[in-house]
Image 1 (cartoon, one colour):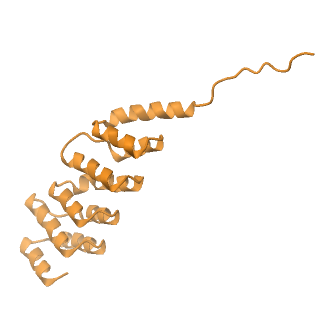
Image 2 (tube, helix red, strand yellow):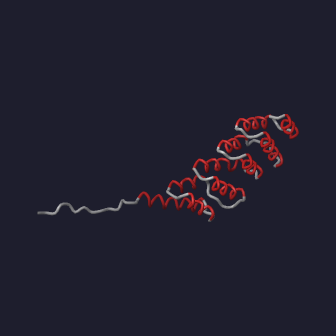
Image 3 (cartoon, rainbow, N blue to C red):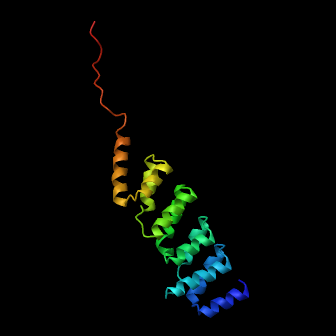
Length: 169
């Protein structure tokens, strides 16, 4: 870390526990300036910085420093980092992931990543999932649709056909 950044951290009066969190950030490749900003954001919220793992997970999933800071400034790092990483692993586009995160940060209704994943597994396209997200589909509504789609899929092409046997000669 640059000496100026170390001085900034000292000026914030960081604890040994926070130093360990900053080390995690550095190992994850998060910049010095972002690390200082993350600690500063936590102190502005009147708590110590304990979200090193969450920020590191986001960085590892390909989130930019600016995106991580946006989540931190909303004091949501620990709350939504796992869902955000999961959305990336599901294979959703960056724009869809950003929409889901923005809705979450703005307090708008949004499905959890588990329901989004299950909807995708039932055969919905990303565009169809996006329509449901924009419509404000809740987890309960998603679970109901998942059950209906799975039931339809599981019973497709299974209708009973009576076999009459051979014709007598």
